[in-house]
Image 1 (cartoon, rainbow, N blue to C red):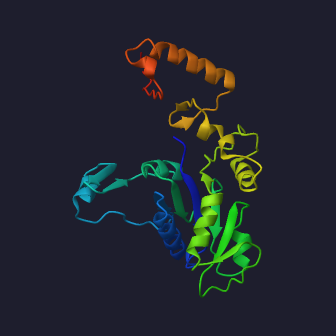
Image 2 (image 1 turned 90 degrees about the horizontal axis):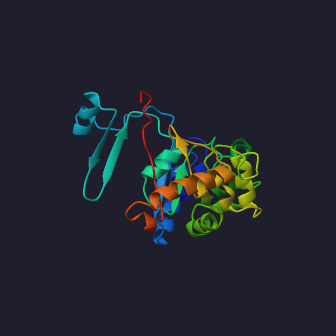
Image 3 (image 1 turned 180 degrees about the horizontal axis):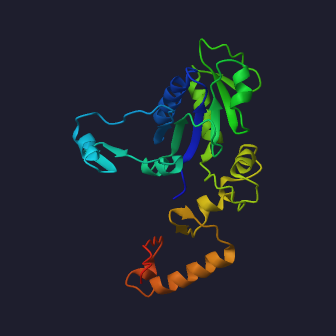
Length: 252
């Protein structure tokens, strides 16, 4: 499944990032888009409530727990989750707005500088704009600048510029040296997001959860071999999407 388009809102502490996320998400949602959000924190936060059943389940030894309701769900996992994995767990979305993750270069970004010096410390070549938040000392130097009150203009920019999150594998399959270079080419109009073979290739292979790069010959050979078996199965002649996963029996 191709990841949804993504944009991150980055800035230093107390720069006004959350206000920008609120304005952007509100406007994109009013336009009928399915929007999800992700936030990075450096603090060691206790995400669950002490004494609640899900917390008690994990204190008893469960590595993960979930609470499900007819209209909502919450998942608690005592493990590191990558940004890409978190996006897949958010479900079917049109856009993901990410707050933080300053060091990642897999998607477009909006800067929220507190002052002019912050721009050089935040930029990585994938910035599409900066937002001037009331009360900041930022003068608007060096970038396309929008006011926080211009949520419509910000949403227009995101809709026109944001592209599906790249995998960050730097596999060179797109013809560029790394994902950031491909992202810069996409933003500059010199490449399409479909150049990322890991996001768009019709056949993917994962070993222990990690994607394995395949050349065209191997991809075609594996596809043809598997489809030969699948079409011999009942209903296989109508297959449109195939997913295969199995555990390797090392003793067998």
